[in-house]
Length: 93
Image (cartoon, rainbow, N blue to C red; front, side, top):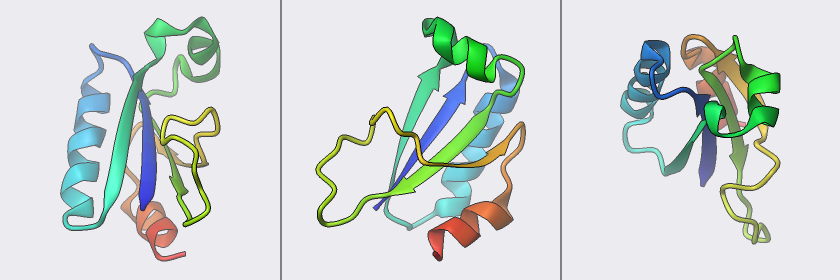
């Protein structure tokens, strides 16, 4: 399963658009999406303030017992707009 983490803001229209585009693009692929509001954590604001939305992804393995909300978000795929090419490449790795 692929775990996506979307760093966003509640009032950000680009964030909503990326989430919708990702969900539509993935269709029947098995995935989990965690959306984190960076305004709830000063450390996340420091990292992603002007970059949101930012999309990360990681794959779980049979041996992976960590929670999808792990402190390691995975590989950064894109920010501002969904990069379907990078998402597809990641899904096919």
